[in-house]
Image (cartoon, rainbow, N blue to C red; front, side):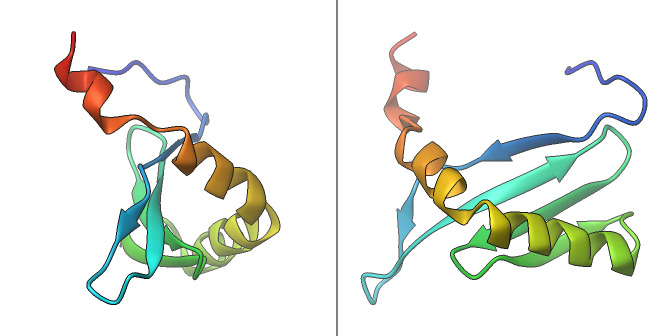
Length: 86
C-alpha cells in the first residue's frame, strides 16, 4: 500500500498501447489517496473520475495537454515486462 502525504497528488503513466487501427495511446493516472482520475493521451481527456471536481478535471486535462511531449516520453520508457523478471 502506498503512503500519501496529505494534499500530494501522485501521477503515473502506463506503457504505450495500440488499438486495432494502429493508433498509439497511453493512460495517465492522478491519485491523492482519496480521489483518482484516469486520462488518456494523446487526446488529453479524463475518462474516469472518482472525487475530483469538474474544474479540477479541466486542470488535469490542461496539465496533460501542456506536458504531452513529456508524458509521451515517460510512456515510451515504461517496460511492462520488467515486472515479470523480478
